[in-house]
Amino acid sequence: MDNLLTSSLELAGTFAFALSGIKLASGKQIDWFGAYLVGLATAIGGGTIRDILLDVTPFWMLHSKYFITTAVALLAFLIFNDKIFRWWNALLVFDAIGLGLFTMAGLSKSVATGLPFWVCIAMGTITGSIGGVIRDVLLNEVPLLLRRDIYALACVTGGLVYFGCIYLKLPTSVTEMIAGSIIILIRLLSIHFHIHLPVLKIKNGK
Amino acid sequence: MDNLLTSSLELAGTFAFALSGIKLASGKQIDWFGAYLVGLATAIGGGTIRDILLDVTPFWMLHSKYFITTAVALLAFLIFNDKIFRWWNALLVFDAIGLGLFTMAGLSKSVATGLPFWVCIAMGTITGSIGGVIRDVLLNEVPLLLRRDIYALACVTGGLVYFGCIYLKLPTSVTEMIAGSIIILIRLLSIHFHIHLPVLKIKNGK
Amino acid sequence: MDNLLTSSLELAGTFAFALSGIKLASGKQIDWFGAYLVGLATAIGGGTIRDILLDVTPFWMLHSKYFITTAVALLAFLIFNDKIFRWWNALLVFDAIGLGLFTMAGLSKSVATGLPFWVCIAMGTITGSIGGVIRDVLLNEVPLLLRRDIYALACVTGGLVYFGCIYLKLPTSVTEMIAGSIIILIRLLSIHFHIHLPVLKIKNGK
Image (cartoon, rainbow over all chains, first blue to last red; front, side, top):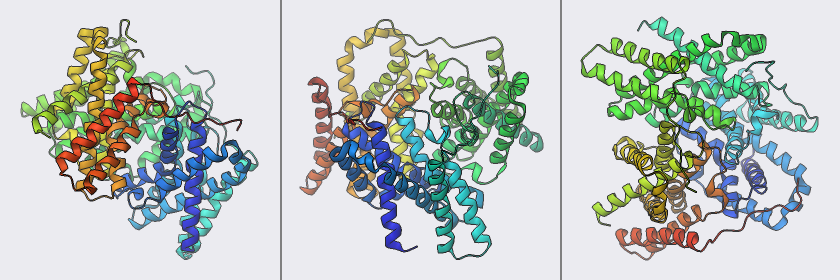
């Protein structure tokens, strides 16, 4: 992928992730700085866990743009408040783009370390989705990820497509573009058509 | 211990741990894939934290059997549903076996790195019990571990017995068998006889 | 700073942090050992996350005094119960001292590894404040840190002062004393005068 484009989309994804944290914090008697921290944890949480598991330096230590983007997200929220959610659909698209890009970033970073394919898929999924789990745990909610949205499953599917493309010997850039797009597409379609996985129920257990 | 036996018991323990996560998820409007993730986090969470603290590669990256066993646990739940809990007592036994084996695995791994004995006991306890804490935090409950069950205390006791046996110069295999059995026994006895530690109360503090 | 003094104050801070965990646990049907674990997680959680991010051996593995201090805190709670909170103001002072010292410890440790200044400030803040976040997540509350107290912001301010002093070429010991005192002062003043950051509100968003 074009480097500048990837980099811009990554920041847009970070912005959308951070804003989702700030938005959820806004209903919970949380102060400005607390909201910033929740936004930051949402944006960088998944990649941090991935880097800890891979035993490499957490990515956000190498560049301040993630901290700054989160500050911009908070500022945008303070200025525009509820108006920002008139563009909610745009934000959901950015969030989906973030999910696709973050998952691809996690996948590539893991493939580079020579891990087996299913570990790479797990790493991609962790990169894309743990941030939202941390957000929900901090704000004392059952993670949305677990509840209904097709989120982690989009990452896993994208990961499988990724290795399918590799198997077909497609070039890496094409592979990443296809797999990333699949994730974004699954995520957007599942939101648009309200597609959910079935809820796990127990009949009459204790 | 016999290697094949240990390996089989480890999978049985993983199965029981995963099922305890899936079961708790089943009452909470969580979808199939979410339940799988909770089961997985319960089964591999403790060992993952241990490996991060020891700065070694997380154990589940080296073998796919933990991911597969969790999938089998979900499948078993989907097929048998509440019937599976007719064997609940069997599951509690497996869970206790898992606790004993996981704790021993954590202990041995830490002893091998030359850490002081009390750190090794902490590592064993983390390996055996943090998975359940992650499960409860994800599902928005106060961890069972903290509440009433003799769980972490069984791990600590087993750890002390372990170093007692080492002090008496018993061979490692005998030591592990004794200490592991003690953990399983304490756990099962405390369940059977409803033995709890006293709850910490405050009289009239704020 | 004088080494013996720092060391004593560090234990006083650990004691206050542990006691804050034990106190919060006491209203929640948690048993003695569970309360010990919550106290321990509160006292060592922040430094552990810092050490994992820095990829060094967690500090508590190198010395048993943190485990012992937490045990002393539990013992003090069991013996004195609510009487201990007649000295609550003294405890808040110790807690603030702990915050200042822990943050300084995190800062220095990060500066020594040559990280950029804003990562060092983040590390200091993590060291000082994540323990309380873990405590609140374990006990199923929205972290106090996020809610109203000026806590993490005191750490960040202290961190900025730290690098201001470094820029002015003050000696390290003086720098640490000034920056640590600023954190303690901000924390105590914000408690005393009930100074809070504004809560983030959303007008009528979804």
